[in-house]
Length: 136
Image (tube, rainbow, N blue to C red; front, side):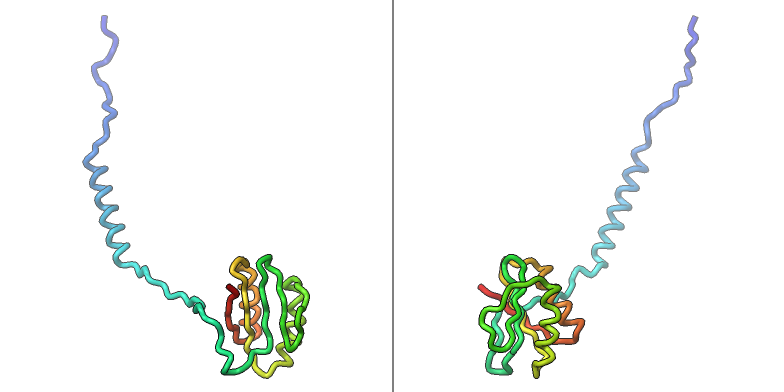
């Protein structure tokens, strides 16, 4: 006595519809990649020193390799290294005494980008003209 039914459900899926879907997605992504604009303009500072013949820049912020800040203003020879929050009042006073609103920023090659960007963002916020230089 055979109690099994002869109606068995086939579990196989149709692969034709799956390949159609893959080819449609492939065509979609190819067209989208061709239509997208892959170029982006980025302003990168040039690898040069500032010309000293033009106008002397009186105020300079030096970022050291351990992300400390040194403010050189006027004739001070060895100012102490401080944190960013401590240099802001000194920087404001030095820029108020300056005739030109150009701030020279010297960053050590091992300094973090964030340390340099803090000074650049603050100068931009105060509407000063930052001039980037680097120490070799």
